[in-house]
Length: 415
Image (tube, rainbow, N blue to C red; front, side):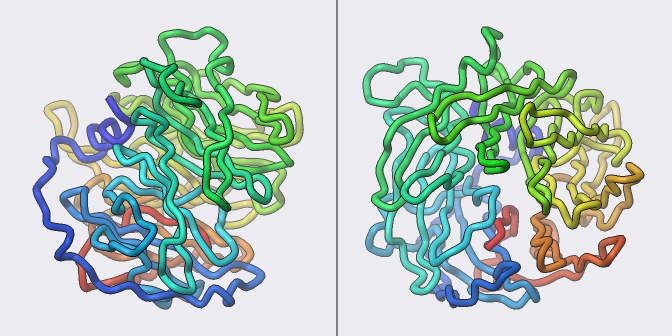
């Protein structure tokens, strides 16, 4: 079972894929002023997805919420250099993307990274990161000029036919070419805990090391080992240390604090279970050795599991989505919520609820230096902008992204 299918099994129930002629959904591409890269950032890239989970569009909003581009790239785009069209399971890197181009990670089944030139809304490069199997890439972290890591969520059970084709790893790539350079095997981080696989998800660069979150699921997603954070030394492409998060499952995302001294790790818990006991947000000190600072159980944040990725609104405030659930004989339906967490007092405040349906509020992204956060809302087809005050986050303001296609905003990435 792929991560994409597991996400949908937990988040979207039995929603069936419908046929769709994405060639008809071409809004025309518009560039972004790449020279507008201010000290606090330019805004957010937005990936909107169709109800068929095949149609997709990448747009951009400024810090003030103005639309910078209604479409940088869509699933209908066929510019030179685009080998594979944009799919419906695309995400953006965890870390802010500076400079003149951004990367889009097309997870399952495409397994490609596509770079978009902001100034021309063109595709200068695209890299296949499958190496002979459905690798399901989940993140990209640039560590130096000409070097980046791509987290690959799947294992290749028939490895050995191509170079670097084992999976369960960080694929080392040179984005400037682009080309594959090598891999970092993450299986040792599980310390022999078969049948649990590493399942590397999101990753960030903090304290000079790359910190990778491992979900630890089995092949069928029925069970998972304790979540882990793995520190990678980019100078040697080797595992530095491993921090185990006892009792937490399905750990997925990491966010770097404004000072860079800590990260917030999001652990939604087992995707196919309604229990909140294994779901929490954990703050981890970055300086070696990795150390758990504090833990905020899902039960203290809301009625559902924590989202896949939180965001620091400031040094003392964290934003996170809290998942709702579909109705069942055991329990009524529950809406999603967007929650502000006061890290000092450990108290949570609800900022927003989804519009009647669960699994429609996405993970927030914050530009803390700009004093602003954003959160995608697929149900209302908007992105919410939230100004950050001295001690709290203001009420969300809904913003339209693009109206030509009518797709639903689901993924954000800082620019």
